[in-house]
Amino acid sequence: MMSWIPYYDFYMELCSKFDAAFVTLLITMNLNQGLWHMVILATQDFFKVHLKMDPGVMTGYMSLIMLPWSIKILYGLISDNVPIFGYRRKSYVIMMGVI
Image 1 (cartoon, rainbow, N blue to C red):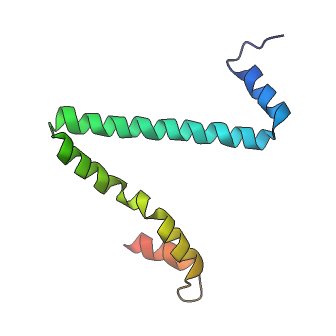
Image 2: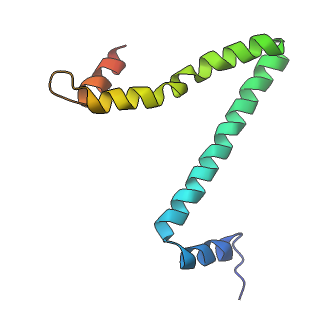
């Protein structure tokens, strides 16, 4: 019998083949990725329509906005492997909060 809830049957079929926690994580990550793209498109529209920027200038600003996300993996590697005052992550969280 088919469910009246959209995609419920598909979700249950996936859960029967894979672990339910994995399927839930997969759906959550895909939803997060889609929402991230919506934010990027909204930002580009704001730059283009409201601020009337050229594509080159807009790309430069978008690159500056994305820069912290680009170095996130480097920050993670450093904070996991280089302790400050004997702490690995706690000192970095406090230091970045102050900055």
